[in-house]
Amino acid sequence: MELNIVNEVTTLERMTIGQLRQRFAELFGETTQASNRTWLVKRIAWRLQALAEGDLSERARRRAAELARDADLRLNPPPSKANTIPPPPEDVRIPAPVDPRLPPSGTILTRPYKGQFVQVHVLTECFAYAGRVFPSLSAVAKAITGSHCNGFLFFRNSLNHTKETV
Image 1 (spheres, one colour):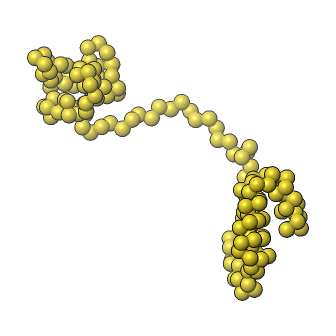
Image 2 (image 1 turned 180 degrees about the vertical axis):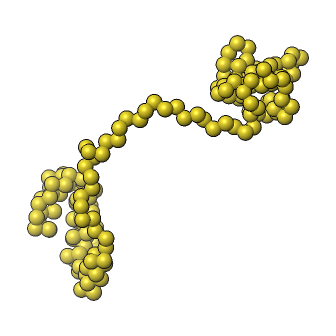
Image 3 (image 1 turned 90 degrees about the horizontal axis):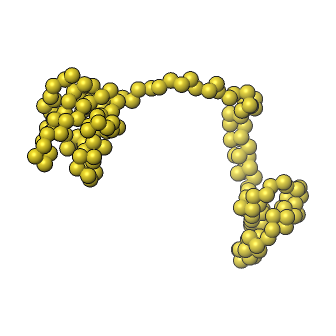
């Protein structure tokens, strides 16, 4: 019997959706509007196997019915999505958490680099260097060195010994 089911499943996989619906109606005695090929093949294959090898035992059916009786079933349908559209959010800006490794706003970080002193101004949410504003210390370090490096490591001595505050 197993060989026939394998052959049947192989045949099912080559059928069109219309042919699968027709086969479903033959096996289940009712039509279906389903157009999901995978679902149709699985359901039909299950039915073929149940017919060939036997369905659930009476004991298994009683246990399934017992479990179904004990299940918490929804008594009311879920609320309609049309009625539960939340109002548009207000344009509230949530401040980003302050990194505890950073010095307070207004601090000037000074660091020697290639024979010159580099000065970076710590602003409220960004950093200023050479007349430009950068979103992070790493972006400042990249502008200075020309390659990516960790901003905290690049300015580590300046961060440990913060300079003057404006």
